Image (cartoon, rainbow, N blue to C red):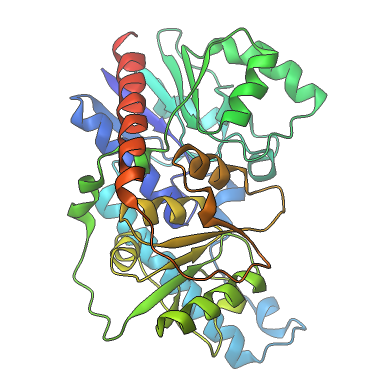
Length: 363
């Protein structure tokens, strides 16, 4: 059986790339032929930095030197992601819209849509490709795996569309309980919850990506999923408690500051840094996930901006709600009993693997 994965493979952030790689490799391990459908809509790819005359002469608080410095940092960041993509992803030819998908999709027997926030309207807008709304051969089966929509915000028209479109899927598995409940109210389809691919694969799966990186000091990592001065303040406080250096790994402008050392790293370098950190401060779902995978103490910051649902759902399932803190909290550092967490995670992991295996083998 030939399986295609349709996910955010060109959204240049650590979570998107690593979940994509995990799903690709897990399906390979089941003995199937698999490729990532290289769908590159403009709204995902347009974030790559470009220097133009307009950029240089535009009115902004930054000097020409500062603009070039920011540009070079971003170019290096995307270069590292592109190198990872070339090395680890098995991609189809690139396509950019629903019509061009036809050229690559009809080679497959099954399309797995997901994981990641591919049903989040704030990201995809009105792009219905992610809901399987494209022309395919009737023999091709669709599966949704570990789909996330953030906090569901579908309009009346969206709901009418979903009522017609969800039955197209042979199996629908989502990441958050709130999305399961939401879809169950508008569809007779059986909806189940599963883990994100990064957590579905065994922890030792990631060993093959770890690289030798020497950091000559003890450090904590701060990684913002959304720009937040409060997140940085919490990191400074924890760093003082642990007498450690702060490594900042996101690309928001406030991460380039005098309080931390900024690291521009590839996805495999990133998880290597996580593995040796003394603590992680983040507002990112996937950085939270990799903290758990590596059994690292962490604090996930609740920003109260309607984007906290994903992390909260995961932490609640693993009995780690005490690690979800408000953005104005000043936590006292503590370790985590990962033995209890690992028991719950293994149960969820085996259940997710089983559901995906059954979904594929029953086609």
